[in-house]
Amino acid sequence: MTREQFSGIDDYLLKRRSQRGLSQEGLALELQSYSELFTDIDSLAISRWERGKVSPNIRRQITLMEYFADEPHLLLSNPEFELKQLPSISAFQKMLDQQTSYNHVMGAHPYISSDNISFDKINKHADNAAQMIRWITHYHSNLTRQRENWNPTFITPLVEHASTDVTFYQVDGVLIGHIILLRVSPQTLNSLLTGQLGDSELTPAHLIDSDQAASTYMLSAYLGGRHIAEDYLTHLLLSLIENPLTLALGYRARSDIGIKLMDFLTGVRVATGEPLSDRLDGARYNGKRYTYVSFSIQREELLSSPLMLNLMRNSNEAEKV
Image (cartoon, rainbow, N blue to C red; front, side, top):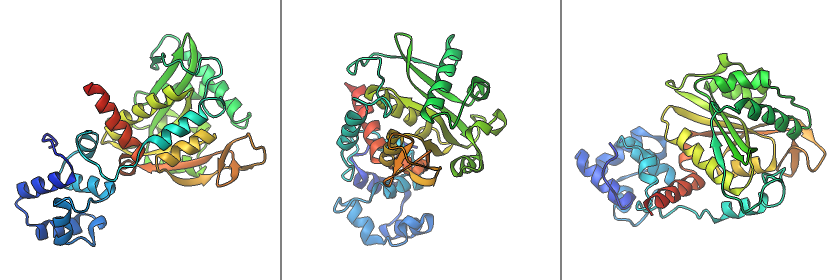
């Protein structure tokens, strides 16, 4: 249904309500029945929203758009749609500058120039994909200090599944980043995040086809520099937010940059792994270090994340230039 252009939520709400033939009181009553987010809403609140006196928070704006059968990401990603409550992306940019400029454990790649922004994106069907997978197994084993020894026999069948989304980032033949996204059932995702199911226990039988609703589990990711991180997040937008069959995102963060990324994405902590004593090992959370910290983000929450909204709007703005 999303075809018209709107200047903001006030313009949107007034037009959509009028098209439905609803009074402000009638809309308030319908919204109260539609979602618990609107249990305290009355006609006065609707009036204030439509006159631009007050703007509903982003989560409520998304639910309003869903009520009117629109696709929120298409509206909110338009830079011309005013979002008065959208925080700046500057804090995230500062974090990337700090964390990916000097420490390869946190994300910067030690063998390429920090100002190198030219890279190749390769999919899982590339001729050298087998070599990329071998490098990823070494990366993961080193990252976890051999607590989790991955091998190609484990990863390759998962990567080759039709619904698995894989991107390799490469500069001059060197692997500098990667993403492996698996589609699993909500039950499997919960088992992975709570530690009931280990990553190495995953098989293709756990994976869900692309045409079915499923959660996304980020099996592995490495962001070898700021430019890789930005492209990686844009990739998440395309594979998660724009796919209505995606229910949630789950991730086991095993490094500090993974923790920071989940913080910016408003991820909810699900569980922690074993505690660690080495200050350079594992992931730091609330002043302590763990083998991993797992997070879950529902699709609606991901869409309302200020980081994702800023990235979507910046991407669309760049395309217009």
